[in-house]
Image (cartoon, rainbow, N blue to C red; front, side, top):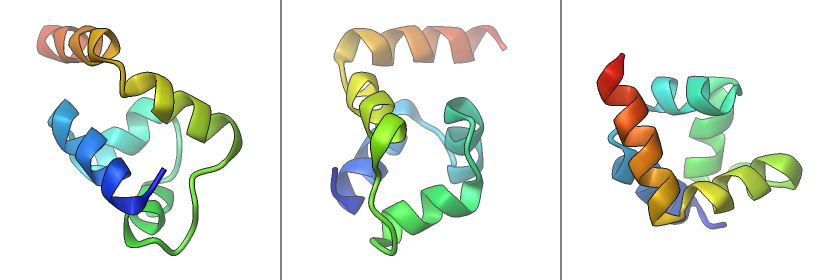
Length: 68
């Protein structure tokens, strides 16, 4: 997953870096580093972000956010 992929996913979900980090339970600095290409998304984080790219998952997340 490239830095642009991470940014695109976060924007698709309509989330700030802080909110995105909170959603996936990681440090906001980590999201920033992924988006800047300083660090690569690896392991379980990569699996989670790849699953989140699915349109059905995006709809569920947006619906969940709307209820908050």
